[in-house]
Length: 468
Ligand code: 5AD
Ligand code: SF4
Image 1 (tube, rainbow, N blue to C red):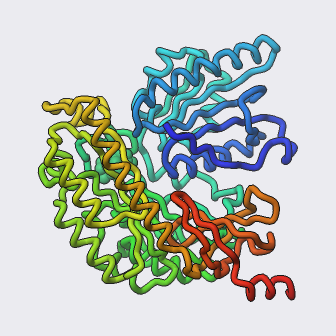
Image 2 (image 1 turned 120 degrees about the horizontal axis):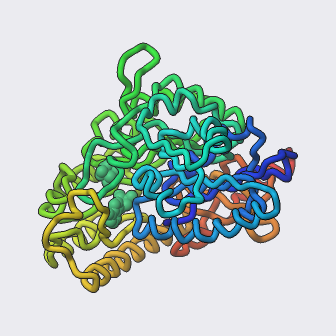
């Protein structure tokens, strides 16, 4: 699991009595959810701290999508057990909670293996956390909630309390009905649910009022969004983007993760017509072989994906794409792997995530015949990654010499340095005045490195700032 623990304001700076340590793995949705868990616990006097030592409550927000998620969770729990025992020996307490998709998938099994866990809660139960903390205090044994009433969750979570920063996430949709052969999401996050547009717009306005300039709309299947519009009609994602783009001060919009099947005409047109919609799209393809795509139950062919890319680039010629690739899905032959390599070459991705297929018990692929052996999976993944790395380096290098609008998100590591991002989500470093944080300024890109860009703020912008 990748550690994606969000940065939250710390207890020591807020004077709160109880210390909450939240560790988050996995997707951006988990980062967002961790923020909301901190929000619901704030009225109980909990405020985030940056280490588990001495914490009154520890929440592990888990991700089930990657390999060995469950084992990683149990080894982390083993370490926390010692801290909990130490704390209890000293007369204190430490409430230990497991949240997220592993909690959803494993449920009571977690408590069976780790009886010192107090709370197990699935992604749809975060609004019940205060009640569960109270119950855990009273009850002998753990409190477990892994139901799926997703509407209830959004109705009951408070509005985002902590300002999320210049760039922020907003969950608009959860769950998935696609049932790709390899994926646990339909089982852990449940069926698709879209938040009403009015709730999304209100949350976006509040975030912008607190300084957010760039908003990434989140959903496991975000472009399947079909929320209730303020007029009672159903809104698709395109309609929502047009409405969000009207919010003054909201300069940049993104959305992730999309499915090729839900990339409709209106959404493609939104890329052409809305300047705030950034020219970058994460569009997982998983494989370039029709046979494997079919086995994956993806519901599209390689040709369909390529045509989609062409239409998107027609609508927005500077559009850059990123994708997800799985190497070694059951039944993948050498020619299928070659088809994937060919598709990658044909599209030319700006960035990508690639994974070795790994079994998720309970998913259709887990029982499929013709497993690919580990060494072959490894080799194919390496080939895929080498090609994707070259494409990313090439894409970054292609920006050298261009002047690009950069949204400055914070201070860089070196004194006097700022960090920001391009419309294509590339990290950029440039020397500049800290008052530029939260603003967009033209930057001349001097060099495009494999993972980031280095640039120089156009002199007029700096002078304007100095004169102001
Ligand atoms: N094995 C490998 N990769 C997987 N993904 C999801 N499930 C699996 C699995 N069982 C990848 C997919 C998905 C991304 C979020 O994780 O590429 O798009
Ligand atoms: Fe999983 Fe995405 Fe497929 Fe849904 S569309 S099952 S979330 S890979």
